[in-house]
Amino acid sequence: MAYDDLRSFLETLDKQGQLLHIGEELSPEPDLAAAANAAGRIGDGAPALYFDNVRGFTDARIAMNVHGSWRNHALALGLPAATSVKDQVEEFARRWDAFPVAPERREDAPWRGNSLTGTDVDLFAVLPLFRLNDGDGGFYLDKAAVVSRDPEDPDNFGKQNVGTYRIQVIGRDRLAFQPVPMHDVAQHLRKAEERDEDLPIAITLGNDPVMSIVAGMPMAYDRSEYEMAGALRGAPAPIATAPHTGFDVPWGSEVVIEGVIEGRKRQLEGPFGEFTGHYSGGRRMPVIRVERISYRDDPVFESLYLGMPWTEVDYLVGPNTCVPLLKQLRAEFPEVRAVNAMYTHGLAVIISTAKRYGGFAKAVGLRALTTPHGLGYVSQVIVVDEDVDPFDLPQVMWAMSAKVNPADDVVVIPNLSVVELAPAASPAGITSKMLTDATTPVAPDNRGNFSTPAKDLPETEEWVGRLKSLLAAR
Ligand SMILES: [Mn+2]
Image (cartoon, rainbow, N blue to C red; front, side, top):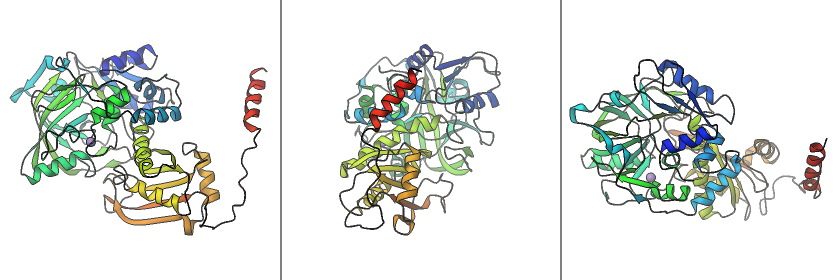
């Protein structure tokens, strides 16, 4: 089942009991964010939240926590709600192989129905804005799919990027924008600024659930997120031409905001409670001038609470970070079995791999640091044997405790790149990185006294079944 817009997905969530409509009158602050924060504290079955009675807003519809549980993430991929995390990641990896699936261009985008242009542009007239964490410096758009093109190669569909970045509303027609240097939009902006140009941009809000997943996915620079969305949906992604920029944007968006990043201009942005569980302070960031807003009738404003994990953002970017790392590593090392990059957007990553020869596991771990995602995130890598499930943390801790001789198996490399938001980096954007080889050494690496592994008995699996049926029959 492929959803063409947010609304059709919300209907399915509702039918599946995975959407909670809160109709009682609430305050925009702190109720909306506190409710979404609480959704992350009630367990893995948490529903999406839908609000339409918010004090001070006469006409607001707000959706939060749409991807904020494994049940909702499964439904977003068109899988049964009860699908396990492991099976969701495996199915995601299987669908990846269908890339590229060409998008389907449609003419009748519903957001063409309403627009504000020129001096009528007013973000506050369209969006029911509210703050998320109590130390935030303002209102944020934190779940947008942002479209930009390579100014040196604007007709290249693959280099057109769709990404999620943090965006602060700083005026009726002004936004501050954070392009992390490792992300594709930063390359677009750098090229535009080198040419002394503004960078046109389209910010789409309230998208179909797979679009939100691919917009946060670490893909190679020239790979199209729309073609990946088609692979994950199992159906071409519906796109339409944005009226002001001419960019390809999702057909089903609730709101499409178009304008330019003003070249060589910076303005204070922040603070903002981040996915790291810490605020990032105010910094000078690029500024967007909004020139047109298009929106559907009765637009739904989608937002996402983030802060101390786990919150919606961790569900949203968990599998979409694991699978690209797995595929990028396997392209050179087919021995790689699984990658768990679920922790703080992959600042820490666990990889399981078979080994060809002594030293091989360290090579796999080092390669993870130089994948597109590794350059900006992967700071700690733990490599485990092929029979350790990296998603099973007791097994990982067994490998850490039994297989590691710290002097030989822990490698620290100083002064590598990381997102400026990483709290432990020093200076911001620079960090040392640690590789822990928690695999059993193989020849010619003859270190340790590992002798024969004590594996589960051959009869154990049969006994698991027998014990389960004996228990069920009690
Ligand atoms: Mn891209």
